[in-house]
Image (cartoon, rainbow, N blue to C red; front, side):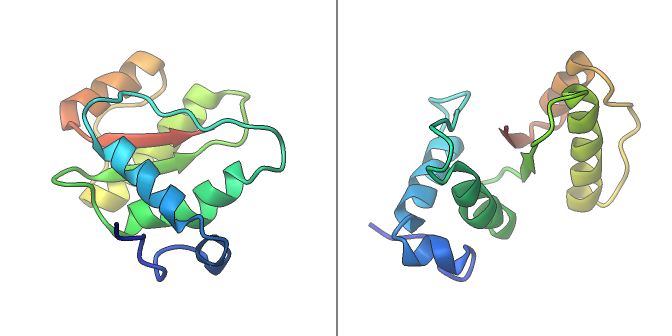
Amino acid sequence: MQVENPETIAQEIAASGRGQDVKRLRERIGGTEHKLTVIHGQSGVGKSSILQGGLIPALQQQAIGERDALPILLRVYTDWVGMLGRFLAKAFKEVRSNALSVNLDSSSAILGQLRKNAVLAYLAC
């Protein structure tokens, strides 16, 4: 079983042996059988570290199949729909090199845009 490329993830993640966890998360997210992946646990177990130092950089480095990955980390929960819409619009612009023609200011607008573009977005809260 191949482990994530250590150059795409933080040294702390690779050194701790959690590269295998990053690989399993990428496989789960890239598959079609799971529509949602929730990462949860007690404070201090390393959720943020594996996301920020492992999964997000890995997704930014390499696409999953034919799909674009737009990893977004939300850490503030006030106006999370508005913040998510702004982050998605920015990510679309970076990946697709053009701005969206729709305002992503509601959950229905966000879902509609994701369906329209058939883009796989990874939301970590």
